[in-house]
Image (cartoon, rainbow, N blue to C red; front, side):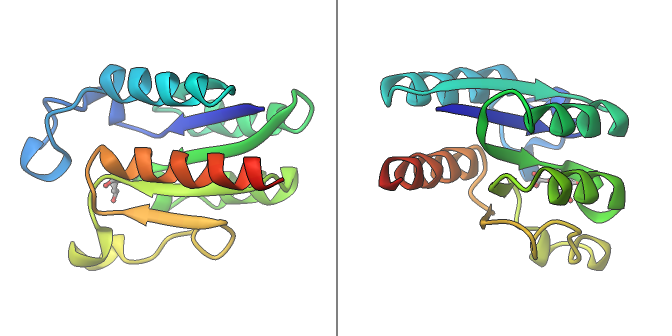
Length: 146
Ligand code: DQA
């Protein structure tokens, strides 16, 4: 199946961005590892990072017609602000997993609300780069369960 991974704003800076919060892995490291896991399980995985809300909205919209089976998304700061990205995910009605490197619930109050969690199949947060790995493992298990 086709798995789409979306990364929101500032995640292109991973590795150098507040490493005490987000860890030392770069986005390229994370994507390469997800790619290897998906491929080994017989799936195709595509990753996209953007700092622009409309690019992410457009990619989610396109997922409706391109055979995407599941979306893994770290909306980053858009988690707490983007009704538009939430609405796009609701519109395409594909299962999605919400991912965060940090645990937003133990951080500033403005990070406690997510526009995505009540629509997500699952939410994985607080495990650094492993949050992506756990979410992908769960998504693959569900795909195989049919
Ligand atoms: C984040 C948490 C968000 O609050 C923050 O704006 C990010 C990254 C995370 O992965 O921990 O950019 O989504």
